[in-house]
Amino acid sequence: MRQTLLSASLLAFALTVAPAALAQAVQSGTGTAATSTTPAPSATHGMASGKHLQQFKTESEAKSACGSQSVVWANTSNHVLHASGSKYYGKTKRGGYVCETTAMQSGYHMAKSGQ
Image (tube, rainbow, N blue to C red; front, side, top):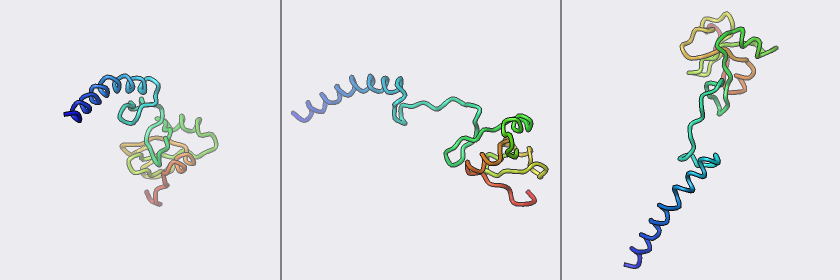
């Protein structure tokens, strides 16, 4: 009987304190995975090795952003890079124009020759 009262008291305490603590954690951004929200979409798409890879819709946007780096096409479904003039450059269903060095640092790799 005594254990039942203790359990009921703990449950009542948890139900009154937990919601306030969770709300505070969410507002302060320190919530756990269960309380945090999914980040909003941004200009960076695709993930490889836990890093974001910035993609560009057009080759000219990528060239102006990449500076002296080469611009390649990144296939985001398999993390393969395609050089300008190759068969799949700008052609895969999922992908975008990216800076080659940045993409390779993010875990992407160049396609085998002929691809």
